Image (cartoon, rainbow, N blue to C red; front, side, top):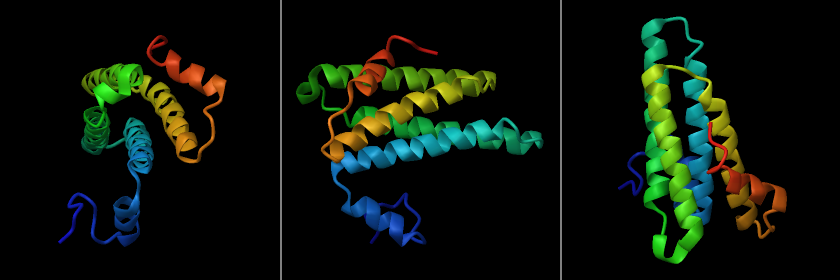
Amino acid sequence: MNAYPNLAPSNPYLLNLVASASPAQLVVLLHDGLIRFLGAAHDGFYEVNPQKRFEMINNNLIRAQGIITELDASLDMERGAEIAIQLHDIYTFFNDALRRVNGSKEPSTIPRIIEMVTVLRDAWSQVINGSPVVSSEASSARQLTVHTV
């Protein structure tokens, strides 16, 4: 029985990667998936077939929002304190922005969100690798809630 039913059984590498990942590594993998779906949604804006365009944009934005919702739901608000609150605010901003993008079909916000998600992903990756988060990246992460799109 597949412990991760949403992962394609035809990709045993990905299944093994997820099954053996630490919680922090799973967060990085979720950010990787979020970046991938946001990129695919952005690419959808350049699809000439209107039906395919709509499906690419809508389906990938919904998948991205699903990941954001999962990241937000995984926050430990008691133990995470201020960082958890800030991440919750960032995830709320991302979801609200992506809802607006999906409703308006205006792609200009997506690259900025990808940039912000990448900053978060890189910070998590540095934490996993035991590297201190350098001050410029930490500052960029703090500014995510201040300098919105």
